[in-house]
Length: 160
Image 1 (cartoon, one colour):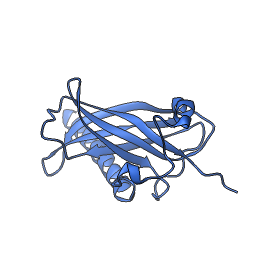
Image 2: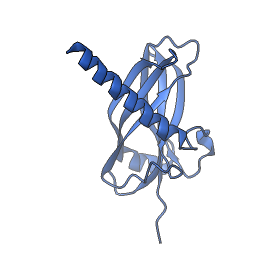
Image 3: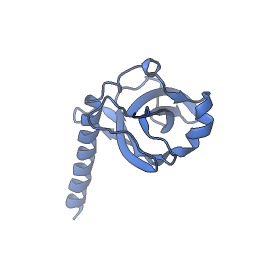
Image 4: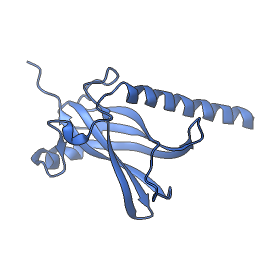
């Protein structure tokens, strides 16, 4: 009974890692410096105050794990919900590492992007699950806490 539960949990974790790895390896925006991406609405932009309340992160989960090579990794997953009236072709998520209340590191990733074959635009009143992982950490991080937040988004251009 216990072995079967453990086997199912390991299989589910492996499936998440594989799905996340496929999404990350197929998306050239994932490794790009976020400042290189154009037309993204971020905090401080005029559209951020208007639309950011409609782009939410639901069911956020952060898990510590070990890779097959024995290195530690943090798996971030959740559901991005677009509760507004515009389609989004790109959404940025910031992965943040803390030592207690002190922010140690932040990294922006792009789980929804028009350059990926795996992600279509996030339509109005819809949601999409994602999984990202981090396997390189600053030496001062003590594995105390990790969080994530919506960092930016881009409206899909109108199709004429």
